[in-house]
Structure formats: C-alpha cells, structure tokens
Amino acid sequence: MGEVLSALGSVAGLVDGAVRGVADAQQEFGGAYSVLADVLAGHSAPEAGQALAGMAMAAERADDVACLLGSIAGRLTDFVERIRSADGTSVPSGARAARSPVAGRTHPTNIPPPPVDQRDWEWAAQVGAQLTEWKEGHSTEALVFDAAGQDWQVNSGVDTELTAAARVVAETMIANGDVGTAGDAATNQAERTAVRRAATHAETKAAVWAAANGKQFVDVVTNRDFVCGDDYAPGVARKPPGCAQAVAAILPIGYSMRVWRRGVAEPFVIMGAARRADDGGH
Image (tube, rainbow, N blue to C red; front, side, top):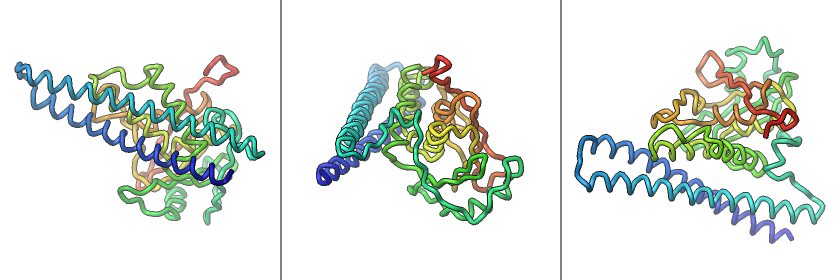
C-alpha cells in the first residue's frame, strides 16, 4: 500500500508541475497578446487579425488544458483519500477541507502575540524578522495568528488539503464570472490563470484554514511586500486578480484577514464575502 501511495504522490507531483507549466504559458500568452495588440493597432492587414485570433485561440486551449490537469489532480487526491480511508487513515478531501477542521502546523514564535487591538506594524516587523528573506523563485512564508494568539506557519506551494480546497473556490469564481469576463480574450484568460495560481499562495491557504476552523479573524505576517490582487481592475491586463480576491471568496461574511507585509506600515485588510451553506450560500 505504501508503494502505491508513493507512486500516486509522484504522479500528483508531476501533474502539479504540469499545471504550473501551463499556468506560466498562459501568463506568457496574455502578455504576448497585449504587446501584439498594441503593435498591430491600426493595421488592417488580414495577417494582423489572424495573428491576434491565433494568440487568443492558443490562450483558450491552454485554459482547457489547465482545467483538465486540475481535474486530474483532484481525482488523484480523491483516490489517495479512498485508499487511506480503506487503510484507516482517512484524510479530508479538498472539497470538504473548507468546511471541516484542518490541522494546523504549530510554529511557536519568539514574540508573544498581544491582543488584536495592540498588534501593530512594530509587532508585525518583529514577527516577520523570524521569516526567511524572500527571493525570486522561493516560497512565500507566513505566520498566521488568530484572535486568541494561537499561531501557525504556512508557506506558498501545493498542499494536498488546503490547495485542493482553494482550487474548488477558484473554479467556482471562474464559473460564476467573478473574474475573467470584463476584458478581451487574452486578458480574461490571464485573469482565470491568475486566480487559479492563487490557490497555492500562503494567504489563500491561510484563509482555507481560518474558514475551516471557525477563525473569524486572523493576522497573517508574510515575508513579501505586497498582496497579489491588491489593485485588481477587471479587464485591465496589468492589474490581474490574485489571492486578495481568492481570500475574500473563501472567508465567510463576517470573517476578516489582515495581511502584514514586509516594510509596509499598514496591513492589507480582506473582508470575507462567502455566504455560508446554512445561509443559503454555496
């Protein structure tokens, strides 16, 4: 059984790598389309229109591939859960993770957390100093604190339960037209890609944990100086959505998250916008 789980884990890793590769390609398609559209503006030659149409088609097909890979990843997760359940070591699936408790990874800090109303940028800077300095290509690190002062560490990247739950929310956002509907084909594609990629971000995963465990308020201290999606403008290619929108879609109404960024005095506040199932939401 262990060999089967190990093999499935390897396949899941390959699929996740493919997802990231397709996501990178989608991002490149979006950027290339914008540049091409600017360069060809005003040209009526048929080749110009054909080039733009081809680029848009490539972006759409990449989106289809991304959806298929995401579906494969979800089915692999469910299959692993089925095997573990039969073995007596059940793991909540991604779809359930956002509704049921998720175990946190405790990471006691050297800075005792003060009451919520006394947590300021100086406190956040002291906490953030315990995190690794972020470098391009490295994971985002974050320490999450609830109102009672319990703290938990989360890094960006693929996480079986948390990422799977976030991906469900991302696909729901796309299906509902919350992102990827206000611009041209390439910009819409880039927005869908961006919100899918946000499923692996530290803030998004912290939101899944908070929602799953009934933490109505959390402080998140990261080693980054921004929150992706903080300037989201629907239909504007250079201002795509990100974890700011994903977090809002995950946290129920009445929940909130403050993200403390390195070197920034004021936290970025994200208010929950998700309706709970018992309120008629989904």
